[in-house]
Length: 192
Image (cartoon, rainbow, N blue to C red; front, side, top):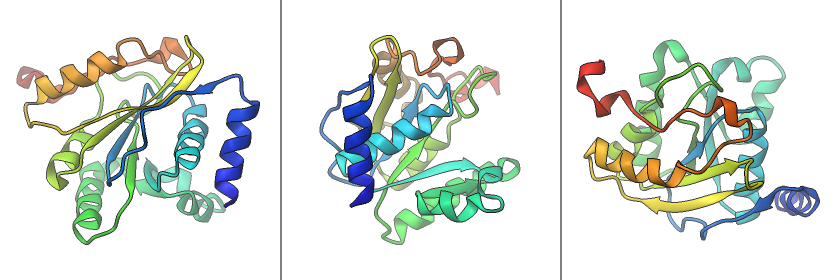
């Protein structure tokens, strides 16, 4: 398969190293973080293709306009209308419940900078579908990228996020200055 050959070449020629836990053996919500650069997309494809993980990913709907639309959908993209972001959660939940099998890649820190919190769509999708969450990362400080552990969320948002924060504590992203601390607004109800 061409994607597997591309991924092998990418990792063989790159200064970056693929360091990964075993690929998940079941459908999962795959967090891609810290999301600090457009390069994250390339890493996400190279990781998933090298490990043989079938993925779908969420991207802003402007990426799917014109000639890019068929390409982005062919690469597994699902457009997100930011004005109706909750609608995409319902769409993904319905796809999973209908039996479609895939790993869903979500960049919870959304746009690359300017956010103080992660977006909670990944958490809601995982809880509503019962899917586990796999922690994927890019870390420029060690020049590594890959997949970390796969977790089952308990529903206790703060406890679940403490586990996620612990994993990402030493991960800086491709552009470390744009890193956002893994924190959901739902952890502190007074922030709503």
